[in-house]
Image (cartoon, rainbow, N blue to C red; front, side, top):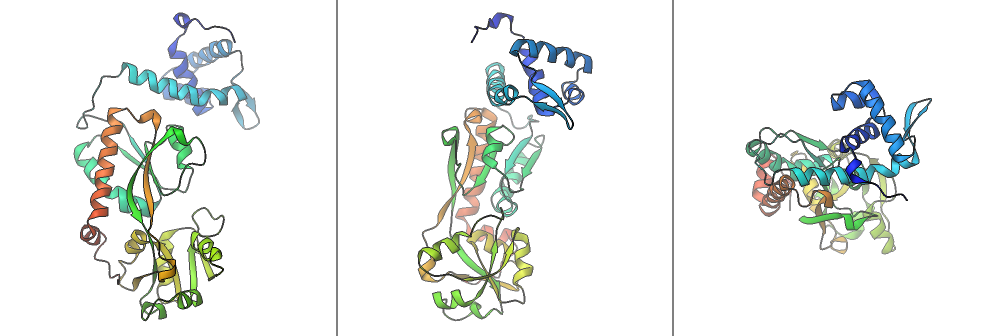
Amino acid sequence: MHEVNLRTLDLNLLVVLQALLEARHVSHAAERLNMSQPAVSRALGRLREMFGDALLVRSPSGLVLTERARDLQQPLADALTGISRLVAEPGFDPTTATTPVRLGCLDLEAAIYLAPAVERLRRAAPGMPVEIHSHPDDYFGLLAEGRLHLAISALEPRQRQAEFHRRVIDTIWSECLMSRDNPLASGPMTLDRYLRARHGVVAITGKGPAIMDQRLEAMGRNRRVVLRLSSFFNVPDSCVGTDVVFSLPHRIASRLARDSLLVTRPLPEALQSAGFPMYLYWHSRHHGDPMHQWLRRLVMNGAADMASDPEKEHERLGGSQATP
């Protein structure tokens, strides 16, 4: 590896490189940078000479990244973020901020945990647009790439765990959601009655067994799953007027049970647990950033208010008719 003379390094080229690696198109990168296409093409030539690699090569589907370019993406993003922090003025004023805020979680988690935070953010920082990424995705990868500021999830990263920070914002347990005229809506909720029922499952990723089925398998038991959905929002229509039962995180079940035709009930005692944590995640690249610190406090305070005040949640969800 040859030694690089930083005095001869043009940092503007690194900004152009990031735009090229993200856009994978010279014209689109030029538009993003407010530069002419010939100027970006010249910069690409200098970058190829600097790195001794083509970086972007033509293919039938357009420009694609070389292996060297793919290896550069994350270090480049980290370096430019660090330089931005280095030269940025300390402190953060939400009243004048215009930086877009990018948050990630599933739709119903956004409704439960982010709605109060977004309301506060709009009041405190009216110039900051809010983008909520609610499609099922690898939120940890998006955090690592800098495409999200925060993510809410009960999952844990499978790799590069040391790069992430997290804070518990709620404790979740499961309960049953069903039509109010379902046979399980009244009478004792025994394990045998629960297992004899017809069950629905929400499989966001569409892969693998549900957590409840894994628990039952460990007990040597099983239930009859007759319906698999990919979205929580389809659950109410699947319950009303049917005998299908869903076992869901209690805040999601309460959110859906605002329909007076639905009720919630506890799981059988043998399946009840102490609950599992819901986390707010962020990447270490943003840990010391004043704007991000302010945003984290705002989201955590909003989630804490909702989690600690059932009456407030009940009121916000429209007066759920859930039963104990």
